[in-house]
Length: 465
Image 1: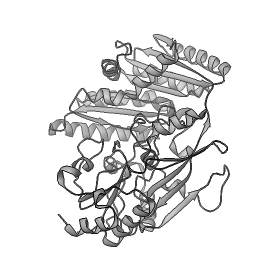
Image 2 (image 1 turned 90 degrees about the vertical axis):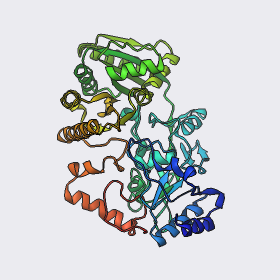
Image 3 (image 1 turned 30 degrees about the vertical axis):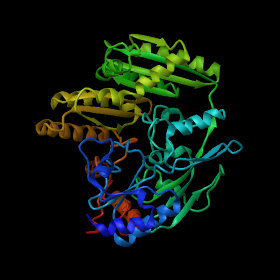
Image 4 (image 1 turned 60 degrees about the horizontal axis):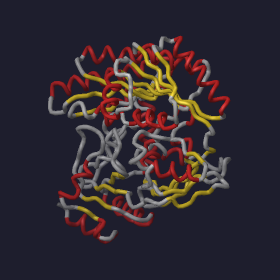
């Protein structure tokens, strides 16, 4: 134990908000990612931007690594601390500071959960669309840091599309405000976009200004069942090619369907090989027209049955069941590894078929679900990290799936981030010049390499002994 670190941190923050005893800091050594953990030297809980600034100024001077953390729901090891580092938890940044209905925006601290923001907007007759499956517990700071998506990403976009401005504390402790409430603002470089999706390696987000939109008047939810994964994937491609842009276009394979039904008990047809959850929203006439068209397209693609949710409550239950897919699958085996590839939507049928072949080839159990409307596929490995031989087969299968995504013009991650878990795969997608550009940006903003070192890519920069 480095007592000087504890003493220095306790001089910056209230000592009651500095944890260093082993039993207190164990929960902050891992996130929602399987098999990744590292014990921090200490865990700190700043309450103000000034405290974040002072802590980072100290960390920069001493070369101490800092991992920023919200509620730890990440799935790429993004907030796992670096060896010899501290964890900065922003749980006390938990206030919505302003709801500006005149300008359709909301100012919030980063520790506020996504569901709280959604509910605050809805109470004012407005709508915050991004809805990651973890929205009940994930924080907006984490959403911004990972540019989170969600079920409604197809029509409404992802977190980046709703960030108007950010307050960010840089590695040296400087505080910057990037953006404004203006709909049009092209003064200077669009630096806020540099920090959205930066996974904590460039700065610490302490305030977020979010765009809100009018709440849709009507909504209709459909559930289509298929006897093959390929037919369901083809239906998605056909719907988009129509072109129809539904609010939600979600996919579950049979492994996931059975796990979710066992978990949520909402009446899903467990005999189906695949399900599509389709939702349209907007003006009532448009909703009726699009729902009818999606039903027709699904049937032509080979759907066995297409049914509409009879009530708003039934529609909500179906969406809630889909959001529970990861939790439901996690009950099957001791270790659940949720992957996150994205491909052009025209390639979905091919990719789903390849995932199935790869799983069979390596004899690994994989449940597949995802936001098929935007090409985001979640192959989920059900395994046991104590079984080293099986884990090796999982790793080989995972790498092959990443390569399939890249070969189809896709990406190794659509919303979870790179973090530690996917760092090895990034050079498969990025060329040497691309990697060098990432390193140049990191070097410029964090020359001592204290912010979340070892995540996304390696810099080879030193840290405190």
